[in-house]
Length: 579
Image 1 (cartoon, helix red, strand yellow):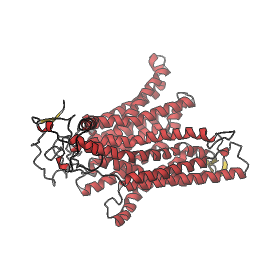
Image 2: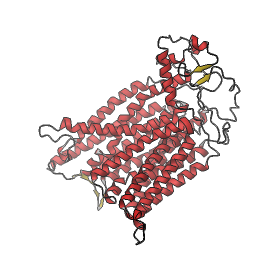
Image 3: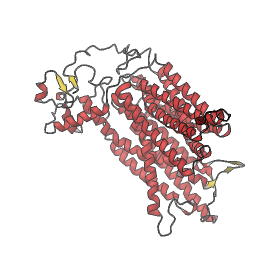
Image 4: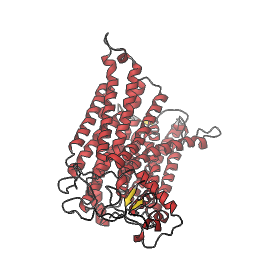
């Protein structure tokens, strides 16, 4: 049975806030973190380097994995697509594992180091699987080395270790980098917002390098060189991350967040017949400066969701307790507010699922649309899938513009240090995402008109309309990313309970996976409702016979509805109040 003391006399003294951080962070030796000697940009920049290196390596595999499976392992297109989808789905689920371990037991720093180590081992196994055929050509080689099945087994084990390692470290490293800025210091809090911008900037820079330089090396110089470069980048990232241990600020893990949430539900259900007092100060809270959750600040009581407040009602039996209270019968206000925060954040997260589904069109229907357009500029042919780099380049250009130009402009009108609030930033991104769908619909409508005029409707050929017309829709999606994706990451970090930040960051990443599933579900329904009576439907094999423009308009309409729903919940959202 877990117990918490009714009174706390050990935290009555207050640290010198001018010398130490006010958010409860500690240095590597476990002492209160020095405000001057630890954290800030000198520490967070190391985490940005680690994120850049890890994403570059992961992206270099993800962008060209289909090519390796089909050309090297000789898989069919269907089998390769299935293996890629399974691996990427696993990679997007593993952040939940890493985040849970970090928040509950090991802390973000140790969890990130372990995860990056798994990442490196996985990369080495990939490298070994590619190198085996080269070192097994002699007459005296071992049978296991010359067996292609063994090489494939090593490859897939390494591949899933890469997915596990990258996914588990991702929320830990990002939230750990944000931890280097003290929430109780307004100057550092403003810099933390900049951290999320530059972190996303470097990740996209890594994606651009991986999708161009590293993929070129893989295709032209060989997979051994491609995997070697990626392995060296991961090694550089983890070494850089490790070397900063003396300047890091660490948050202590507060135990299993799932147990705490269950305790609130159980305690509130037990006290369902009790009446919540009008004076919130009558609700139970841990005395002293700190909260009952190690490494977390106290959360002030907020109105709404009153049922869960019953978990903090002090009953007669609690008063008669000999000093120890059962945490399954009574919870602190902070513990109750943790659950309230998660419930209030859920609609915001849900609105971003459709946003992710729209973003997923860049890797599916946008590519199919580009393949049905003129892709030659002179003698050079633009691969339809390569045009996705417009989105990445847009992000790389727009992040500095947002940081250096837009924030000062917004600040002049709002008076806020960050220019606009994170919910406002997300909402602007949702609007640009919808605009990208409208742009895609206009381009497709024009393409179909040209196909009709040229008599190409029943011919599965490219229409004489330049693929460059796709530029605006990719650009608008890039603008949407700068506003919504970065805004969502910052929102989930700021609003999540101190003891659940890694877990909430993992959930903010999980919307990408959920959006991909939603996109697949919508695409599977389109032919069911549009391909009837001999009509080919909106998205047939020959797009010249279809109406992809109507699909884009439908997605734009859903996005508009999603904006209204988002605004409804965002305007009623109650922000976290940490003491």
